[in-house]
Image 1 (cartoon, rainbow, N blue to C red):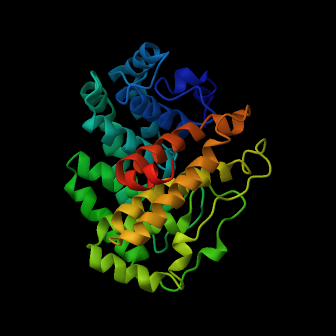
Image 2: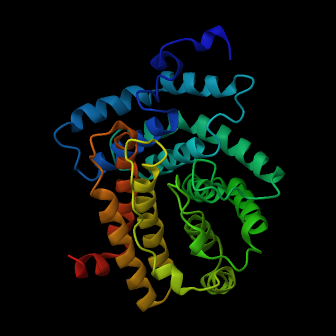
Length: 314
């Protein structure tokens, strides 16, 4: 910290400011991207397009990059904020939206810097972080892996795969009965299962999953969690848990290779998504500044991988 840090947020972070925290500003840009791509940004689509062009300009991203390069900031926003940088970068790389290729080029130096740091950091870790909050390694590694594939960073992808096998490959005898904690917005077990599903061959993943869970029926039996205090910044995390569970359950519905289980997981994903969506506009900034991103993340996954379940449930 120095006197230089005592500046207005848009001066410190000309790309990612205006939210409760830096990472929320990052994934708000991802949300705008997906709304614009899907033609549902009305009535302010033009404003979103202008904001994206301004905030993801070469000049703005150069300031963000320089900020992260300052001494003492090697762990700034690790790993959750980094995960959303990779998610934004990977989806910009795939996006047909005008300007997306330019924005992706502007964000690339920061994404690559954070990838290098993450690989170095993971190589030093003996244990994963199983928290259901910002430190969760499984959630971040899945976004990182998708980024590595989308942007052709084969070395990063290889490093992530090695770290995931080392950190999670020998996990055995877990149960969902220990979840959730009172401030989770990610299910540690679902994040881990989804990550390993991206890395292992289907038969290997099913064998690993059978050893991981004491009772596989728990997976399909998950029901939405209850939120008691949406004005509390930690309590409202549970609305996000319903939405992130919806996303991960939809991912697993596509991966599981079993029609009956896939349908059950897809229906559970929809139930969790609806539970989260019911309180998306609670009127309290503690939830509203970030839950929209999780709702869009889940909705896209449900729509792309579980259309049969979606149509059956109305």
